[in-house]
Image (cartoon, rainbow, N blue to C red; front, side):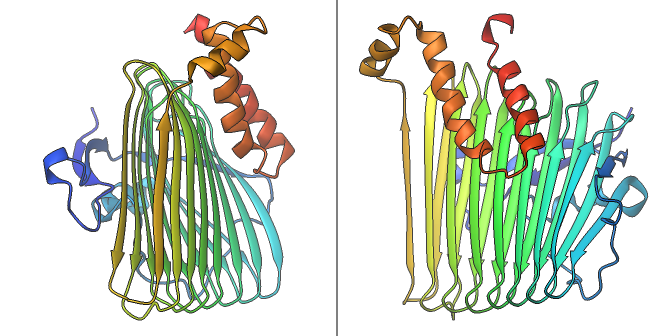
Length: 352
């Protein structure tokens, strides 16, 4: 049996929630074998030079033990100076019960790189840990699209880190539609002036599924910008924790950060925890956060009822529409269709 590592992951950078026990999440995770990473583009596995020696990630340093070279599948992709490049990676648990992978992506000056990561359901229960490190150099843009479709009894640890240089940008889109638990850590450093982050997260959780998110963006440069939008649905007895931290470091004058979340609750036993944090060591900045959390009101249910739809059908329709708004932003027809198929299976509530 695999040896379990007890870890604290997704730790808040400012520990202010002791009495609720939300500063971090405790998990047990085994060290395993290399996972499967397959690329549609044969030239995707590139050699990268000048990548930062150390990079913070959202799940935290305690997860480093899961990414030792002998147990990790490594993959690299880069866009050269002025180049526009796209790669699609299919990531699977493989034949082992526990597996790990590490992906590095870099965009040279003036380049544009799009990386699609599709986390496929496995044939059996297990644990999959994947770390993605991103480096956006001057005037470059990286778009990372992560689609998480783990099956029942399958845990995913998704660990992301990014550094953006001057006028470098990260556009992040995450779509979670599966049956397994997902631990999601994202850490972005806007190190130079005019760097930016745009993050969009969409999720649909059901049964007793858990989604644990820790998103940190640190503004170092001047006139940097971050926009964080999370939008999801909780059904049955699903549980979600969203930690979102915008950190204005001294010297980040004229920077702007905004965080919003919308959560639809469709179960009597759902658990929703939203933890927005703004840290500020610089005076001339603008930071904001807000959350809208609610259920379907009677007027909406009456509207659907008048059209011959019962409560379950109404809930499924609203939940599907919310997530499909994110799915349509993926930008790849094949991946979008795969996610819609998975969504239809998850919403087949009569057969669960």
